[in-house]
Image (cartoon, rainbow, N blue to C red; front, side):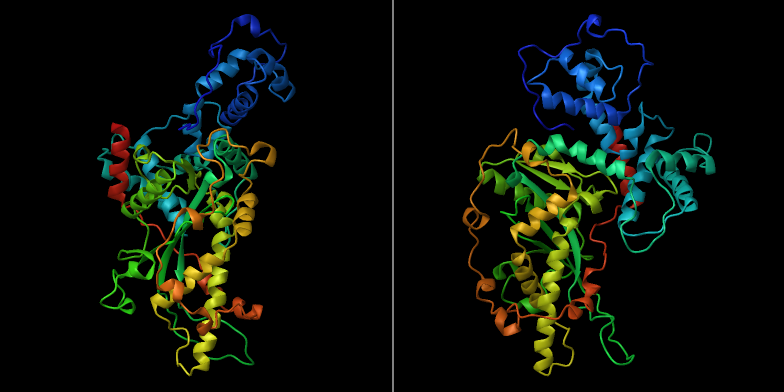
Length: 487
């Protein structure tokens, strides 16, 4: 949905007469949705300087050989529908008309299921997808007479519609056609322009194996290793573009009150924002609670911000509930390239955690502790809090720029902002004094002393990819499709 307000014109936007569309001896162009968005962006950029008729010339020089004022008007009138259609699947940018499919509810359910499986690094094949299509037909109550065969031909068309292709799994980001990234940047650009850098936020979850021993290291010969400890907590990290406001981390654990926190003290009394569930995953309930917190925070400051996040199933919500937030989802499969937290902020956080964890392990070894890596969750959360605090505004700002979604300096002045650059977060949001303020990191060896890079290399296990989102069941996916149809 297009969130920016349309500029009120003294001459209302209306289709001009046919005289403004002179005959051109060139075959009529049928624009793709990607080209229509380029026309729309051109219009919003120059509408204060050029009339519709004056826009025709520059657009034709740019390659839109048969465009006329009527076409520009039609694109503007259809902008909301075009952006909504394209945001669901970037491969649609190449389409010239909306694709109609049989059994659309099954198709959408399959896409939701595939997206969450790929997010958790599952290996999917054509046979699995075809079998799953039959499963969803059963859940939707579609009879054999009314369902498709889901043959190889259907699979090929399905893959083409949604950009699925054969990939080799090698532990790094899968390849995505460069034009998809470009189109997504162009889609986000007019939205970002409505907000100042300090009002653009990104939030993402990451899993932290907080005490797993290294799987490799330095030595003169092979030796036995320690049993892997996969104790994990999920961190929800977020910041604005210029790094002036790092959001307090939300920590999701498995235990409601870990023993290490003591019987007579709450987790909150230590200064942590902590919650729990059986799998230490983000889910819809926690996400809504997080958004309510952020919405209230911005309301107290009289601000309305842009919040960019991935389109995980746990991030679904009613946008009308949050009056101080404009929440924009990144298109599927592009978050590794375009999400600032994934562009280096989370990696920097984990690197800082590794430094502190390595130093603590060394000090525990000096103290004669047998298992130097077996710290408790409270110690890990204190180290992580210090690691997050150490991330500089420059690091965050550079990660935003690295994604390519940030408007150029000449275009970055906000079109709509309620507050000028706010005061630093430390002054804006006073935090109560807690035990974290008195925590002596020097006693743990966290004094910034130099640690050889080989130590960090042996502890890369903490950066392993791990699921942080709650998966929807097939029944929940089906129910969600039914509700969408009712709406």
